[in-house]
Length: 133
Image (cartoon, rainbow, N blue to C red; front, side):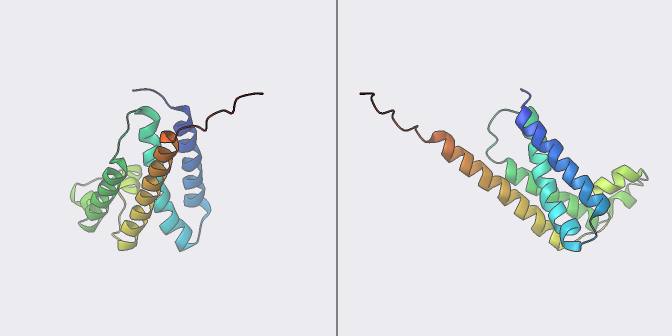
């Protein structure tokens, strides 16, 4: 386990954007869809801040976790468990929406694309230096 400054900065930046969306965005597309796309990327950056190992399937694990939370909303788990803490209720959410699952999928595919691109860039050999005359 090792602290990664780049992912920490990305996490804080995305967290700032999420807070701005939550406070100021009135648009359903921005608040309801883009916010859910970014929450997956936010969680990815948080995990990668502290875990250096390559987690090949992290994008899929995050998608599965988000879908489970969404299914919990379908069954009103927060009410069923008697959770009254406003912050926890906000994190768990209250309303099931299939579009949220689509947004989580877009966020997960964004992460997968990022991982594939960075993996390809890191495995390419640097060009050979030309000999000086």
